[in-house]
Length: 437
Image 1 (cartoon, rainbow, N blue to C red):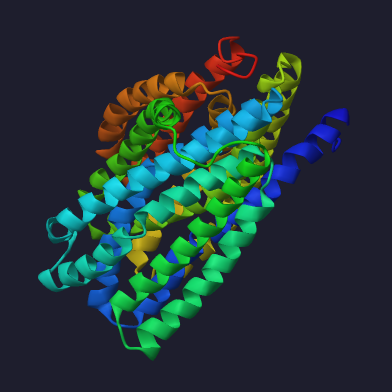
Image 2 (cartoon, rainbow, N blue to C red):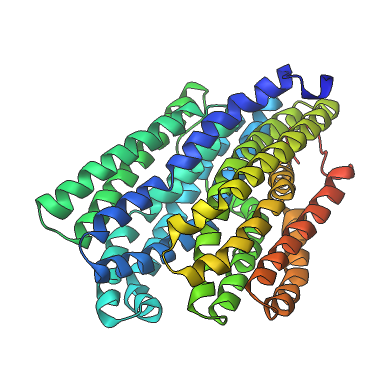
């Protein structure tokens, strides 16, 4: 009975995980709102939005190290009692995000047309995508500032502020989109403008919170090139880790496309389901990032081990719950997301495979968060490359046997990730104590 008792450690974990969960679930709502509003403009604008969103999501997704890296570094410094340095790290992360966002915005503005022409299904869709992408590119610095600020605040154990900002931004985004798209008849451009304004509002709000707290702690808000370059260098391993994950998710999409329209459509639904579940599992991983950084910064290896094992247990339990719920509701999911019987037939067994994988995924997410919080990015990058090297040929071979087997291969991907991460957790190499790793 003791193993299931809700302990003080559990309360500490869920004080972080629950607000993180609500914030994570709120994040994709901005995209869903844009999709719903633009979808009523017609098929071509919606196709254009899909192309532009794919490009933007890829760029921002690759920069997730801004959030993860700042969470780990800020949490470790706070744990070591170095409050001023913790705030200085957060400010440097903001400057790095703003600079990188500016570079990416310029690059997208220059390449918007060729990028959309390459991805779009028609010249008309490319035109719509170019309009949306060009306007949205001006908000890329804002999107990255939000990542850096959110990561910093997580490291400070402030999950409430990002949640409030995300909810307010989503409400503002819907209101602005409705006014600009329908009230002023600006079409897809209105949607891009409304979303960009909401994103800049979030960035200014969160950035102001980070800077004001830094000033109160005696840290400067001015940019320090050396500190910014250090933040950038520390983010490289996490960037490499993210690239391997992105490639791993792209592989089954490419292979599914070769199997025909029905498997590809079923794959899109399956990926949407996996990503939605991932938001829930990632909440405990965020708790892992924050609490691991703090306990290691405080020099408490024993507490770090205890928290790690507890969070791994909760990751497995949430994975079991998610898998069981998906298994029970899989027939409804198939009908709810597609009307074609061929898609239903392809999707149903795959959903059951995904359900079986979830307990493993729950532990993988937690282990990933623990090692990110420990600042073990170099190992995560190497582990990602090893996993990708195993998964790519496995997916190609099993994918040739059929669509369901392609997702069995994805289970192999999760299993290899679990093995590499669990092996590291069992060692002492990631348990580096003190303020600096």
